[in-house]
Length: 317
Image (cartoon, rainbow, N blue to C red; front, side):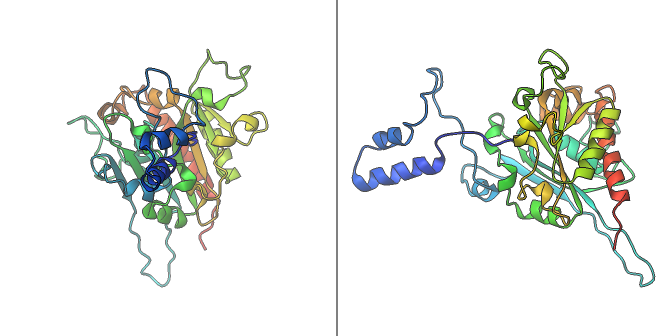
C-alpha cells in the first residue's frame, strides 16, 4: 500500500520544539509555523493525522510501542539438510511476506499463513489446525509477518515497503529466489477504468505487481481462473494509474530476492473481507477463514499454483 501523504512529519515537529527551546520562543508558535503549509484540519479533528514511521527501526525504537502488545513479528524458516554426497536436495525457493498484517491491512496475515501452507487459526475443536502447529498443506513456504495489534489506529504502524529494514524480513527475502508480498488497498485508490471496473460493480480486485514478469503473469492467470478479478499493474490498460501499486521499487522486499525481482499483491478491502465469514476482527478472521464459501481456499490455492508454476521453471544449480 502506498505511503501516507502528510505535509508535516514528526521530524518537523521535533525541529520546532528544539528551535523553541533554543530561542526561547513560545513552543506553540513554533509548532504553528511548522504546520503553516498544511490546510487546517476539520473542526471535528483534535489531533493531526498519524505520520508514517521512517523505517521499522524507527518504529521499534518508539518507547510507547511495545512488541507483543502494540505489534508483533512472526516468521518461520524451514530447516533442511543435504548430508549425502551423491544426491542433491531442494531448498525453499519462495517466501511469503505480510509487512502490514494484523489490523494494518486486514486479512494479509491470514493469507500469508494460508499460502505458506499453515492454518490462519481456527475455532476451538474445529479441527482446522493451529498457526503455530504442523502445516495443513503438503508443501510449505517460509514466511514473515509484521502485525498491528492495537485496539484501533493500526494504520499508524504502517511502514512503506521500500523503507522496510527489519533484519529478518530482509534476510528471508535475500535467501529466496521468489517473494510474494501481500498488501491491502482501497478500490478507489486504484482509479481503474470505469468501463471495465465501475464503482457500482464488483470492487474485489487484486493488483499484481513486482519486477518478476513471469510470476505476475502466473498470478494473474491463476487468480482470474479461480473466479476473482486480477490485473497486472504493468498492463498498458491500467499502468497509468497503478504506479503507486506496481511494486517496482528495487528496495521493496518483494524485489530484494536472489534474482532481484519478485511479486506483490495489492488486494482491495472488498476482496480481503470476502475471504472470511467474519472479517471484523482478528479473532473473527482466524475462526472463519474456512467459512467464506471456499473463497479463502480458492484464493490461497490460486496463489500456491502460481508459485508452483514459477518454481517449476527454476533449476536448482
